[in-house]
Amino acid sequence: MAKVLLVTGGARGIGRATVELAARQGFDVAVGFRKEGDAAEAAADSVRALGQQAITVQADVAAENDIVNMFEQTERQLGKITSLVNSAAISTRMRVDEAPTGDLERLMAVNVVGLMLCCREAAKRMSTQHGGKGGSIVNVGSMAAFSGGRPGASHYAGSKGAVDSFSRGFAREVAQEGIRVNIVRPGVTLTDMVQAVRDDPEVRQSIDATIPMGRPAEPSEIAEPILWLLSEKASFVTGCIVDASGGGYVIGAATG
Image 1 (cartoon, rainbow, N blue to C red):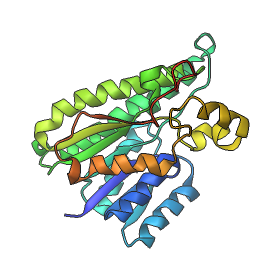
Image 2: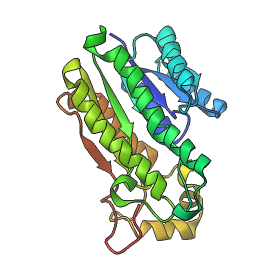
Image 3: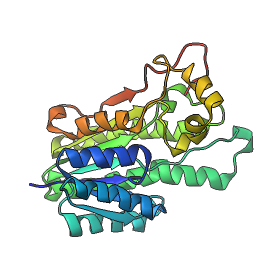
């Protein structure tokens, strides 16, 4: 049976690195994106260049209809979905006493409810109780769930804490139905979400000092544990949190 992977947030960053590594490991890939169509198509082209099938699917993971359509399009064009990576997320930089309600609602809609709905749609298709043949899901969390996040990121940290709790419970619910569910929690990773860290030498130096390994991750270094968890090499691993964080954070320094 063909290996078909759907990656939300697959146009850039960790999602893009996951798309490319998955293609090298024999997956056909659906690249989910919200507004960066050119980047999504470039990601799909990289899959095709490796001899695998790829499609792009536009979807706002805060919108239930978009999510359902994304799953339906993927199966229509590539076949039964065998794996899902929930990489789509947004971040915050705002104090608790200054947080607009709309921003908080959008944060939770994308990072929590949207992820849950994607897991729902995957379970409907993968679960042996629904006639499926099983599958594997990796939810991309964050070390912020453990640390509470850097200043201004407490709401983001809370949303990622919800991802951890939900994923562990979901894993137990579907463990006997052929579905494995795991979490990868990156530390600071050089993506568009942390553009200042990536592009500003002074900011980068201050962040490096907070990481035991002395540097942030490259997106490819997060994709590797994601693909391992999707693979049969992790066949007895479910409900697990894998921290890919360079050692977490230096005691006494700002956390992330």
